[in-house]
Amino acid sequence: MFRLVARDLAIDLGTANTLIYEKGTGIVLNEPSIVAVRFDGNRKTAVAFGAEAKTMQGRTPEGVKVIRPVRTGVIADFEVAGMMLSHFLAQARRKSRGLFKPRVMVGVPSGITEVEKRAIRDSIENEAREVRLIDEAMAAAIGCNLPVTEATASLIVDIGGGTTDIAVISLKDIVYSVSVRQGGDSMDEAIINHMRRRHHLLVGESTSELVKTTIGSAHRDYDRQEMEVRGRSLTSGAPASLLVTGEEIREAMSEVIATITAAIRQALENTPPELSGDIITAGMSLAGGGALIKGLDRHISEELKISVTIADDPLAAVVQGAGKCLDNEELYRDIWF
Image 1 (spheres, rainbow, N blue to C red):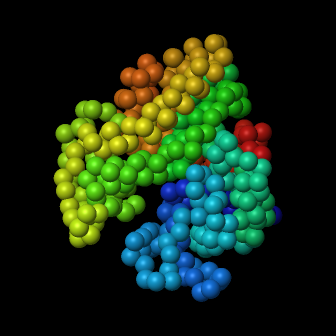
Image 2: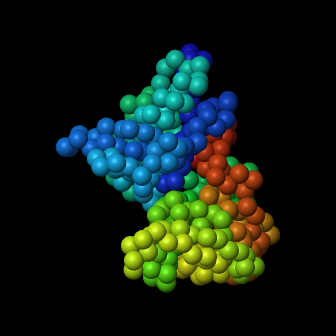
């Protein structure tokens, strides 16, 4: 009866974006994990969510603040995260024919603590009759169509906004995993710091993200790209602009990329010898928004001497994998918790 009147949902509660997958339908929501909040004393009132709130970054009047309630893959502001999830789940349910509250599966980072798991469950339980959790790396591997149910090793690297999850998977279990609390947001921050130190130019998060997606890269083949960057001069206080190259943006992001590469190397070193041979043959898969950084696959391949494949839809790999678990419960039943 419940299956007829309630549609199960899978959620990728990301630092940058929140995606919702409906069982039997596919992705029904993809919005930035951002909320614009009005402060009235100790009271918080949501003004806008998702894409609408993102357009307000750096442009809000006094008393209104744009908040990202999820940081490094976990909930940083419980109250605002609850508002955001309630709003997004209500939107998803309006598009569904379900009458009752759905079962919800949420992707979580590998290194999440019990307290952080509890925070995620608490923020969703009012909108769901049951909350399940699944490791984001496992979900991403399933979303990338890796053979996680077979007796062969699959290496997945999911580079999100706040975290990078790396896992070696075999027989529906994680042989080794590590979660590095660096990702796309760390690259944005590195660009902001670079512009401030080298050019004495203050730029905002939206501008740094635009620079990263436009000319940011991890390989020297993209060094000749150029882009005009606008911000505020720290010396004169007046609006200013300058031309930056792909080479200096690559150098600005190099420390974050080196940290991610070192974590992948650590995963390879901790993989049992029998499974290492499988990885040499099959290579590794990249998922998450960070996989879209130009030349990142080539950089990792050259550094670690291993073939690298980018997912067909890196941004949606986690939620699609969690959705496949909903669509094939018998096959993946022992994967979630």
